[in-house]
Length: 277
Image 1 (tube, rainbow, N blue to C red):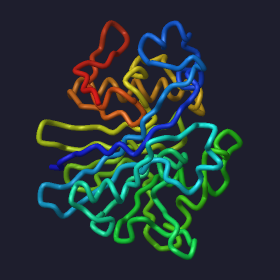
Image 2 (image 1 turned 135 degrees about the vertical axis):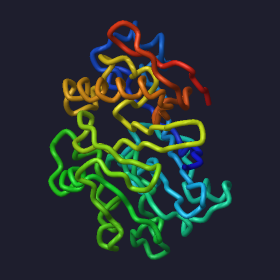
Image 3 (image 1 turned 180 degrees about the vertical axis):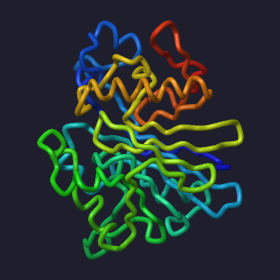
Image 4 (image 1 turned 120 degrees about the vertical axis):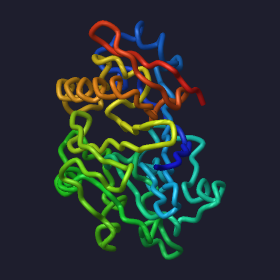
């Protein structure tokens, strides 16, 4: 069993049309606020999961970081929080982290995986941690496709591999008792979804499989997803299980809703029991 804490690592602005794909603005703007320029504020909500015996201290996704701000200034990042500083506020140090799970390697999910030292060299941010990533994501960064190449920065992950801290997942895996990793495609190949047994049931971190509570509806699929049809199929597979098992979902990108459960209504799903920031 794990105790789960969320860490708000910052925000950025993304085009609403990109976030909600083929859904008309008239529909999605009723569920998600945007500016006059059609920009939506997106969170980067990381998770700290600590086992009840204190032996495992796991971080899930790591925000945007500060190494590539000039390359991503289009997204207008703001209120960025260094994960190390966030850990201090919870009574931990970067050296205490035993594991880091990266759902995928887009810049807004793994930026604080590495940092620059005083000499400007890039090194792992959590030197005592095992970093977990899907094998498909690792192979993808070695030869990124055209749609993702601008969203991936090699120095977010290569120093970890060079330090011998990177471990690859090629199938659904029970990493620890009460902590499971499963593979879901669509948004990017080999995205990891994390299942955590907490005191009140199973908590799931779906990452960009379901980035906000508004995306629980099956057809609400981001244009950032590599394959919309695969995302639809994978979402349906996940949501059927989530509803039947009463999972609590933590949303990485929702700027207002931290977590919710889901309910099936006719042939679709909606977020219920919403917990707001």
